[in-house]
Image (spheres, rainbow, N blue to C red):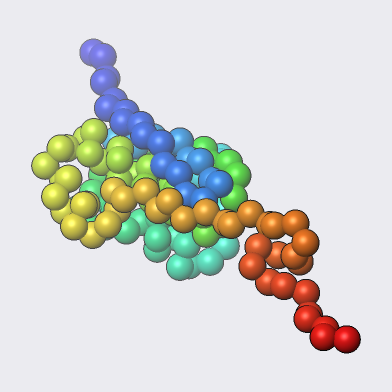
Length: 132
């Protein structure tokens, strides 16, 4: 007897974070960079962000999430994982597209940090003006 486990993968990006996400049929375990999700993401709000697409579709107990994420901070990484999970769910079932799209989980947030300009302390902040 051969056991066939379905595995679905996708990539998610947010700011400078890149997440490679795999959904494997299982019991609802979450692993990020070989660690439990609640150990890796220190805040409960970040764990909630990652779980949103799975809870919306009702598939949180059906799939295990294995994610490899690099770059960015914790918030950017959580957003990248969320986008990766949403895209992987589309591979699982294309009928979920309307639900995920309506809630904004398939939109890549393109906002990036503005670069620092020369002659200024930050991107837009200016040094104090002195008339004399």
